Length: 132
Length: 93
Length: 110
Image 1 (cartoon, each protein chain N blue to C red):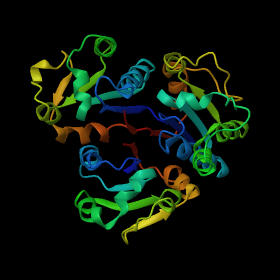
Image 2 (image 1 turned 90 degrees about the horizontal axis):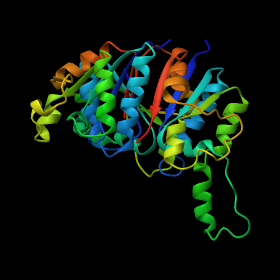
Image 3 (image 1 turned 60 degrees about the horizontal axis):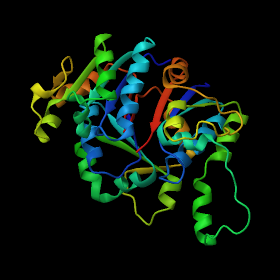
Image 4 (image 1 turned 60 degrees about the vertical axis):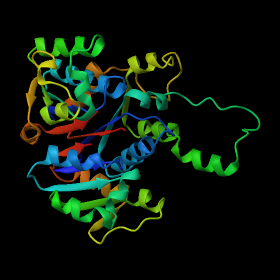
């Protein structure tokens, strides 16, 4: 039976494994036919924004690049949305980080805890919060 | 009651006792918290009434640790089943 | 569908997650969810009537009949007298937290 999973993610990419775990779990749940909603809270708002790649040499050792790349969650977030996942942010936390003006990953919605998150809860079977 | 644990801090055990009381308990260990799956913690988790321990496969593979016999290794697909397949209360610690 | 939530604030005042915890509790309470807010561990420092945003939102929550409690043993471990706790916040023994959590469908630490 299809259910609805809401993930409240509280960590950004790279600081720990939370964002990678949450996005991989979301994709796995979708693979099994479940609906996924993600609310990006606290530092997690950082993964809601499009990556701005730099040009030229990264000046980072390749082994470190290989270590970092899987923790970036922008592409997985876009995939979750392209598969019908509903993802929104806490715009207040974006504001606190000075990034509210930056462009979202395709499909991410501007949101707030009182509106977006509680709307998700109303249709959730399971809430999982992932943070440190 | 299924406890989602992603931090390796010892205080997590107090949280499990505080929230779980006498309820049946299972742990889903991910990230650095997979270290709770080693034999060092086995007796203390048993004393807390933890009956089942599930350990995220990819988190385990990233670490050079050995799990105690009672642990079950689960991939993301199985974690989705654990979280959404039953009606257990999920506690995010 | 989820109708009831317990938010446990375990981080001290200066950590953003404590604020996210009370904001979540407030949002859920205001939108009709049965909501409980528990201060535990270092989170008890948020319940002592500090000046600023956290206490102002706590006051709003209590004024709107929000259910808020703090764990007595966690106060004692930090040398905080129960009388210092913000008016309206119930001081409860740790043994009662499990009962509170039994009554809700989801429990989330902040």
